[in-house]
Amino acid sequence: MFDLLVKVKDNKKISPDLWVLSFDSEKLAQTIVPGQFLEFKVRNSTDPFLRRPFSVYKIKNNTIEILYEVVGEGTHLMSELQPGDTFLSLGPLGTTFTPQKNKKVIMVGGGVGAAPLVFLAQKQDFDSMMLGFRGESAVLPLSEAIGDDNKWVYATNDGSVGHKGFITQPLEELFKQEDSPENLFIYSCGPNPMLLEVARICQQYGVDGEVSLEERMGCGVGACLGCAVLTKSKGYVPSCKYGPVFNIQDLELDELKNSG
Amino acid sequence: MSQKSKIDLSTKIGDVTFKNPITVASGTFGNTDEYEPYVDFGELGAFVTKTITLNPRVGNPMPRIFETPSGMLNAIGLENKGLEDYIENKLPYLSKIKTNLITSIAGKDASELAGMAKRLDSCNEVSAIELNLSCPNIRDKNVKVAKHAEEVERVVKEVRQCTNKLLITKLSPEMDFFMEVAELSVKSGTDALSMINTIKGMAINVNTLKPMLSNVTGGLSGPAVRPIALRYVYEVKQHLDIPVIGMGGVASWRDAMEFIIAGAHMVATGTSNFVNPRAPQDCVEGIENYMQEKGYSSMKDIRGKLQTSV
Figure 1 (cartoon, chains in turn cyan, green):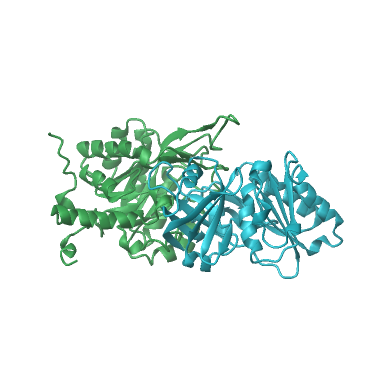
Figure 2 (figure 1 turned 135 degrees about the horizontal axis):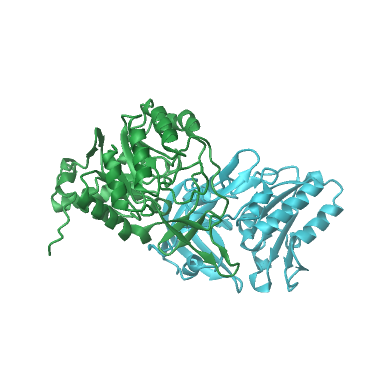
């Protein structure tokens, strides 16, 4: 784990609502594993004060790419970074997705929750990348796809791109048509309401999987206990240290309804 | 370097010598090894644990934290695994840290705290006990949140009888008649005061009409509270001859020096650790450079040397 001063290589809009920031770091490119995250401090000031957690979106050679959406003051400042500007990056932090060899892998993401799944797709074979977005402006362009475009399935709330509704609906259809759902494995990341629905469907069809949580975080290293989640195996644990990736069956889902 | 080595940063409180005046605020530096990859714990004046209670506590429901201008609100609710887990599973690690260990405790009443102090008194690894009587985020009866001077007096007196360890009492601006509380703590036998604990605050989501924290209110910390914390340290030092460990929004050596000039024996970095894990170590290095530049050779040369006459 390193606290590095890194230099912005590029910072560009890839759709009306989505941005990709990139920087070079050999150290991080060689050590970070899909599922882990970095904590950024983009401006040396007390407002905003805390760091912000970001998943890695892609790694190309030694270039780290971060997918983000401008939602608050921190990401607004991030969008103003110019090539050559520097910022602090703490990490890699947290747990990793478990690689699957013999299972049919389905990835299910919501919004910028797609980021860690796209990074995972660079290393893990998969059958389907199912991504939900609130509308056309927030959709990840297909030009960003890893692997075969045909494996990418989209849903938007208004139906402007792909399936109309939630991505969990085509997911459930896929489960229904599967002869042996126990051979499926789900990786999922996105807002808690989506994860809760993914977990419900997985439970119903007997599908195993892992989810990456997007809890509000303070320190990122398990010190402040601001991001506690209730697990069946260990009770309350900080999501930043014992997660963000959890086995879907280990989470006490009712508790997630209040957070995220 | 040879010049630097002449500067003595050590600070003595009671019988305990701290190698330098920088420590960390309880609850902001993890339980054991969370910050080990970033900081050399042995370079700090002391390591302070997250507050331990007799029995395990699960803490408050989520959300527990919310960022505010130059600070954050927290309502963690003293989540911890209890005293015996601390002694059995945390102390073996903490005993290897090459600096003083301050164990922070909270309890439901004076006798429970006294019992905990007695148990810790037999742990050689523990250099000092900090009484957390001022967590602002407790709604149950399992933890005493002292609001009045007499409550603090009763606890400090009873705990004092059960331990010979250095005893530190942590105070909060939420306490009524703060100066009276401070005075009675000293009379009851505390060796030092630490201040300030967080100040109660809140934030509201205007879309959902809900509070940003499940606990509704939370403790405000970070640079936003620093001027208030500094004023408390200053005022207590004007009235009482007692070592003070100052804390509240300290992020840099300059902030730390303000507290020392106001009279603090030691200074803790807190919420800033979440942003810069090296904050305490940076403070130690910065203070050493400052001392060298100014020509001070020991902490006594600068502690409490505020010049109020213009």
